[in-house]
Image 1 (cartoon, helix red, strand yellow):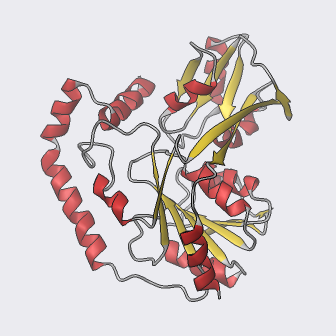
Image 2: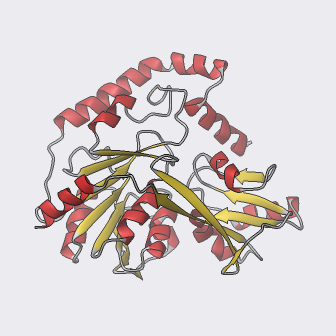
Length: 317
């Protein structure tokens, strides 16, 4: 029932049926209030400039995933003295927490949240910090030696002066309304305010390799199911055999032992395929022969990062 409700909400936000469109129209007065609040926040924000340390934000306009985290990892891997800062959705802690410092893991998964731990494990030389207060986190990162900051999902942080990169989804939603009538956090016209816009499937592609017990496998077994707790789980279908059953939970969901036991009972003699973001949470259950969808991105050679590089150089020098 919970999974059905979750999928219904995602459909309502992005690709609504006629009935769901009517619900969105009924919610439109709240959408107008939401937009006015956002406009007020943006216009009243006093931007803080961090002397000597460039801040690059990777964000999107829609709720849920659009490839921010793999883009952050891709861009941060080519830099030294990097800190990645994010809120840490799904974590069981509050306040500022150092997840990793120069590659050394400093806390557990419950403290960091799934995305922060994935980034920390993917960037063995970087510092990763979670905090509701991004300005505090930037100051902390600078104090412990960071020379460049990447903000994961930082576009809406109007009070921070930064270089904004926005990611457009591979398939644009048919619902163009902002919350709660639709899935946009800010009006679509805000793409024009970013320093740079890149689109999934155009400016970069996702590449998946399957790994089992640490080794890459060429072909998936026939008896598989996909278990995931990411936003828009249907986007995994293009990488899986046709008719693969995808068992999805809400984004950032923390799996329990009971979840796994029920799943193994309902799908006896099947092998679980999952994403890297989910695997950091599933490792504790010692699931036999679990298969990792190891996702990375490849940037189109035509993508021009010269403006970002000029910005970084101008602040660093």
